Length: 309
View 1 (cartoon, rainbow, N blue to C red):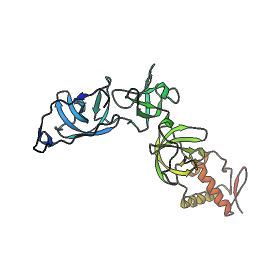
View 2 (view 1 turned 180 degrees about the vertical axis):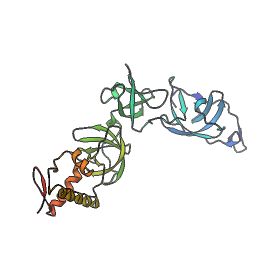
View 3 (view 1 turned 30 degrees about the vertical axis):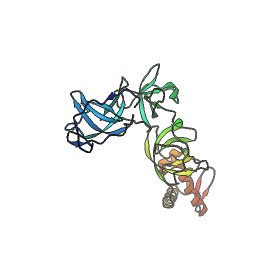
View 4 (view 1 turned 120 degrees about the vertical axis):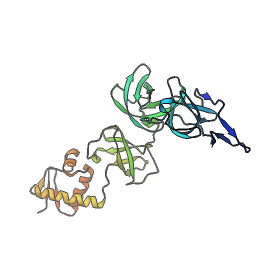
C-alpha cells in the first residue's frame, strides 16, 4: 500500500519444520493486499488494549479499533471489515457497514459544503468528499445525490463523483432484451429517467414507460426493453408479454362498456391518468389499443376511443 500504514511487528507465532507459520496454534494464511474502500476478509495478527491488528497483506497491518472488535475473536481468526483512511490518512478498518463502497453507486446526503467541496454522510466517522470538479450540479446541504466513490489517483484517498458518465459505460453488449436487471434511478431528462443498470451501465426509461411515481435514488427491478444499434439500453419497469397484453385488452373493453362504450382516455392521455386507471405504462396502453383496433373491436379517434357497434 502507498498509504500511511503500520509495519508488522514481532508476532506471537511459531514456525514448524516445513516453514509453515502458526499464530496462536492456528495455521496462518497470508492475506492478499487489502482493498481500500471495500469489504475485506482479514486475519487477526495481534490483540492490544486499544484494538486488534489485521493482516493487510504485503507486510502491512491494519488497526481495527477496540469498539469494533467482536467478542470472542482470537489470533488467527478472520474478520470481514471495511478498509478506509481515517482523519490522519492512516489505513483503518471497521466492522460497521458503510452506505457506499468504492466502485458502487450510492444515494447519499450532503451534510457540509466548504471551500474544498461537498461532504457526504456514508455512515463512517470520516465523511466522503465530492470535490467541486466532480459535481454534476453544485451540491447543497440537506440534498441527496447519486454518486460513484473512487480512489483519487493524485491523493490516493477515497472520494466520490456525481459525474457518473466518467465512470460508467452508456453501452453494453452483455444484455438481452427482456432481461431482468437491478436499477438505481440516477437522473431526469426531458425524455425520461436515467438509471444505473446492475451498477455498471447507464440506461434510459422513457416517459412513456413510467407508470408509477419514481424518484432519484430509488432502487427497483427493471427490464431491458430494447438494445439500440449503438448498444445503448432502453429500459422499462414491466414486461409487456402477450398474456399481459391480452389481460390489459380485456380490462380496456370492460372499462369502455362501463363508460357507455366511449372514453376520452386515448393514447395521448397523460401517463399518470393511464397508470391510475389500469396500472400500466402509456406504452403498454398504446400497444393494447393497437391490438384491439386491429381486431376491429374499437375505433380510435383524436379525441376519444369507442367500441365498435
